[in-house]
Length: 169
Image (tube, rainbow, N blue to C red; front, side, top):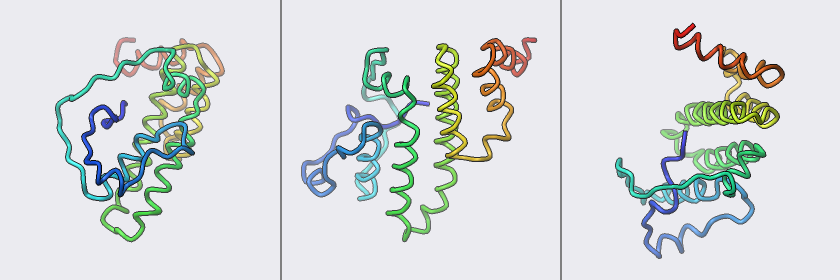
């Protein structure tokens, strides 16, 4: 569930940076993602399917700190809201709104699962909350309920659910 765009993988002309502006200082999470969206809105983006950079993840990183505190959900949702508000006049992109929120919801579910398996149950519950805020239909998914039950009970409940889904039970 990683972001496909990261600052080390971008090459941007200085003139475009001057037109687009720099990273927003009012965001503590997703500022790189938000900035890349603004660049893409100017039609100045191309995608290379092969990896151009590696991203090291460790428990002491700023990313880990924010994920461990479940601070990312509100800001990711805010970035989507602001982006779609700017793009209101572009009807071809408005059709992507639901898909974007659904993807955000799945991302939050992934974070909830990772938090639960790392025994950070309160963080997992927060991520489940963000998942439902992004896509209320998530509440109808068995995975949501298995995760939620495991955040208030034994983690084994979720592990058993996964085993059943894989046909290992």
